[in-house]
Length: 350
Image 1 (cartoon, one colour):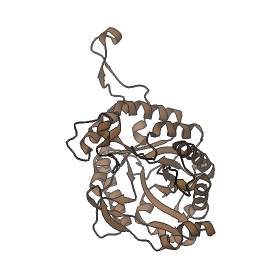
Image 2 (spheres, rainbow, N blue to C red):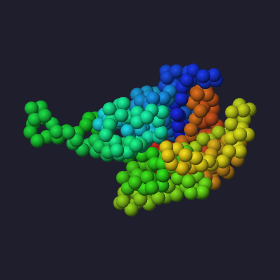
Image 3 (cartoon, rainbow, N blue to C red):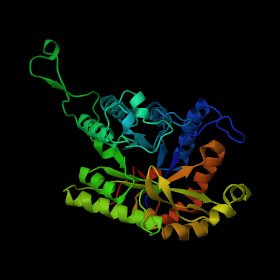
Image 4 (cartoon, one colour):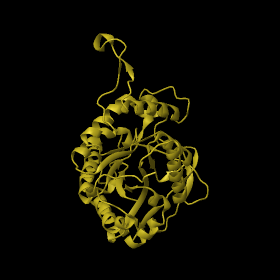
């Protein structure tokens, strides 16, 4: 592990105990949290994307504001649901964000997770999928997105405007943007496809597989298979790999109240999600010295270059900055962390 960031699910709602009552609260507090994390030395500020729910939905305006108000921290998504996206418009937005942020982005994209809406992407105008989960249109649109950010000419030009036999690329272009694109893979097999494409790998707190192995072992195998596929496809360099965990250093009575005994005793779980038997990773909550021991033994955390800490955003900015500060001060250095003042994060060379 070389870096860590926070991953906010962007929940809001007028419920008892929440510090995030409205969408405006959520958006402005996420920006504030990114500013505070940047000052601590945290490497990344990432947001989940969900539609038809009281969560963050359209991430690019939010990420742009976060980038404009920070200096060093990477901003990104975990993940954008490609089923809902116009690939060429997203390519234009991604390039603009990349330029505004001085290339401080980590844009995670995937087919998306289960949604509250039934085939909600069809309401956005994206019909014709033959897959009940919309995976086919997500893959097709993602391929066009990659072509667009790579500068390929994707549309015929009007001969009256640009001359005969001309094709046009989207604008703006941000050279090297593909190096900052990630695909969220939910299985070992899908991670291999990410490696063959030469993209960065984003892995979550669950895998849509259940083999009886501990979650962190399954995920470490996923990372190994990704890197081997990347190498076998002829790609060179140091691709990025991230994993997500819920981790809470218990350093005061408030931490104990929120995440004490019940979290200490939890384990990996197996259940069903989106029709797949899946393995869900546990929550880590303990004293810093115990957390260090536990995380050093987490094979996936140590295999990845970036660790995303899922945060309880509804508790508010102050407490979440406390969690990030406690992790940065008491735990992360023992895992190999380098703060954002030491430059951009690099993956492990393959």
